Length: 334
Image (cartoon, rainbow, N blue to C red; front, side, top):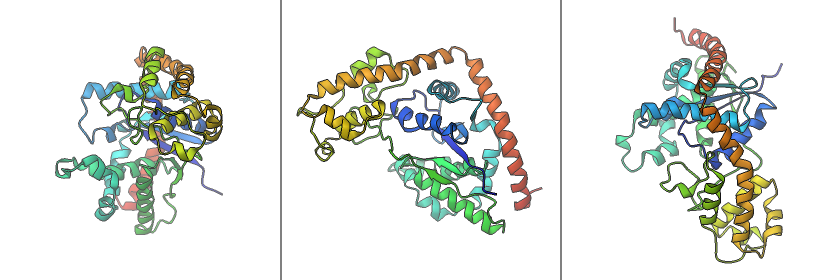
C-alpha cells in the first residue's frame, strides 16, 4: 500500500499580504486542497527569530488566516492553525537539533542573507530555523511541500534529517522523504520599483507592491507609477528579459489573465507601456479588490478567525501527538 499523500506548508505572519504572496503561494494552496489532504500553518515561531511586537504578531496571525480564507482556502477541507498552538513543533525541533549537523546548517545560504554582515548578532533561532522547518514538515509525515527557489535548500535539509533519523534509529521509512511541489510555472512577482528584487513587505516604499487590502484607487496609482520602459513593448521575450521592470509587469499581466507570456507579447508588442498599465490595473482591480474586501470583513469578526485556528489546532494536535508518541519511543524518551 502506498504512502498517503499529505501536503504541508507554512506562511509567516508578517502582516499585509501582497500580490507576490497571492500569486506565489495562496492560489497554489487553493488548487492543492482540491487534489490532496493539506495542512497550512501560520508559522509564528519562525516569525520570532527576529523581534516582533507582541500585539502586532497576534494581529498578523489573524490577518494571515483572513488572507487564507479570502483567497479561497476552506477550513473544512484543509487544516489551518498556528504553529505555536501545537507544542509538538518545538519538541520535535529539539530532537532534530540533535540529529542535524552543524556543517549542514553552515551551508544554508538564507541565514547568511538574513543575518547580513554581522551574523554574530543574529539570534540562535534564526540559525537553527531550518531544523524547525524540518520539524514542521516531519511532525505530520508530510509527503509533499510547495516550495519556491528560496526554500528548496531547506527542504533538502529536511530530507537529509529524515534520512539520518531513519538510519540512526534503524527505523527505515519511518519519516517519508518530503518531495518538493514546484509549480510548472513559478510565479515570481518582483518589486514594482526594482525588477531585480522580489515583491516584499520589508521594502520601504508602499509603491513597490500591491497589497491585498489595497483599494481600486491605490492599485491604479501604484501601477501607473510602476517603473517600466520608455521604448515600445518588444515582440519577443529575449528583448524583454533585458528590462526586468517591464518584464515584471508583463509577467503579472500573464499570471492574472492566464495568458502565456508569448501570447501577451503578441497582443501588446508595439504598444506603449501606458496601454499595458491601464489593462493591468483593470485586471488587478477585478482580481484583488474582492479579496481585500473579504479580508477586511473577516478581520471585523476576530472570534471567527480564532475559531478556525482552534479547530485547526485540535485536528493538527491529534496527528502530531500520535506521531510524537512513536518518535519518543524510537528515541528512548519516557
